[in-house]
Amino acid sequence: MMHTQPVLELRGIVKDYPGIRALDHVSMTFRKGEIHGLLGENGAGKSTLIKILAGVVKADEGTIFMHGEQKKISSGRDASHLGLSFIHQELNLVSFFNGIENIFLGHPYPKTPWGTISWKKLQEKAASILARLKVTFPLDVPVKHLAPGEQAMVAIARAFAESASIYCMDEPTTSLTDHEKNTLFAVIRNLQSLGATVIYVSHDLDDVMALTDRVTIMRDSQVVGTWDTEALSKDEIISKMIGRDITSAFPPKTAAICAVVLSISGLSSAKVRDISFELHAGEILGIAGLLGSGRTELLRTIYGIDRITQGSLILQGREFHPTSPKNSIQKGIVLVPEERRSQGLLLQRSIYENISLVYLNELSTGPFLNRSVEHREAEHIGRSVNLKAADYRYHVSTLSGGNQQKVVFAKSLLRQPVVLLLDEPTKGVDVGARFEIYSVVQEMAARGTAVLLVSSDFPELLGLADRILVLCDGQQVRIIENRDLEQETLLTYCYGTENISQ
Image 1 (cartoon, rainbow, N blue to C red):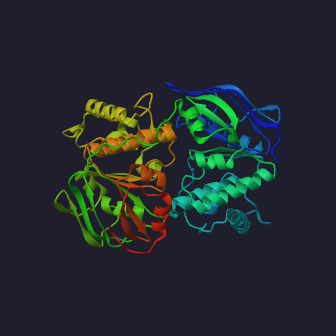
Image 2 (cartoon, helix red, strand yellow):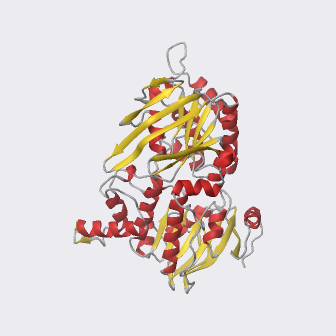
Image 3 (cartoon, rainbow, N blue to C red):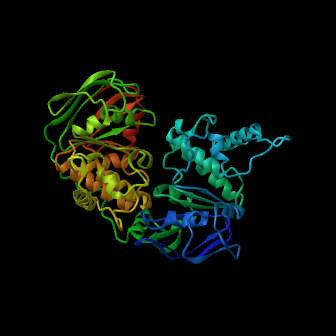
């Protein structure tokens, strides 16, 4: 049951970074036993606030109260001692540690009578946490060998390694399947029934509206207000987040579909079999399918990461054998990968360096990189994707998730691509940034780029794609014209087994 007494109160929190005020006198209150949504666009200040509570970042001004008493949080240990537990947007896993080592990292290890670590007790405790989350996967292998969803579950399991009174969850469902997400929600509701408070940060407004009791909305580093969730509609939440009313979730389509750019016949690799389709200049071809259907693997094969075992590709009228990403980029095929932080960015390098990374030869004079040309080109393409950054010399790690994704787009679009491969391009991105990314995709199509779009978000596919290629278990089910297509129909095809192209 939710009580009105505040368990956590923030007063006048300020945090400045060079050229940017991330939090501007932020105040909010969290009640005992509530699920409290924290909403806002990328860069609104949500993650910075969570990091201050975790002791990862130090506030420049402001005070924190717990149960009416002022507290100081200077480290993760302070936060843990105060009963706070965290699932951060960045998983922060040690890639060469196994699942058990990552789950209990930073927690005291149980000991044997001889003073050594009791791995048996750790295994039992880890198994108990996974049983609670209703998932099973190997915990004795380095987490770098686990799938993205399994890695996310390791990070979630770490939050439950010790009991807490306040759980702060920053985009916890980004890499989860629907089953894993529903299980997590059941765990969250159980925590609430036991009197715990959950601070839930998410861009999935449907989840927020179904799960939370109250929401606090942030915009431009400040608090807009706090409301009972049931008092707001989805459109009202969006307008308060972005500061304006929205008339459509998707920009109007202006591209004309022209000649065939890419023709694929009988394409097979380790995870996909006998794929055939044509992709036209100006066309956005969506790729739909359930987890494990082969969507990402199809893009990887076209991009030259996975080896082709059978079939042929004709690119702009000539036979093409993608042997590596470098080879594909040279031919005008570029990829925006699903995991931007691990696959698309060098986080500790500048925005300039990230945008220019794959076109260093074109930006060089002889053996020397022309910095002035690099900076001019990077800033130009950054403006075209509405990249918000105080200074392009700053590390990409200082940007919000939405702006990091725009850097990945900018890098891919620095030279007009012939084929643009998009793998979950709006994953973990807020409503406002989504519209901007959709506009960039539509503009690229209007300029003649052919687009292959993988997305788990059916409304996104239906809002952007001209046609949709459905995959199931690595095989092509059918190609559908996107005319009056319903989500339910598309989902039915994704579960199908027939092999029909139309």
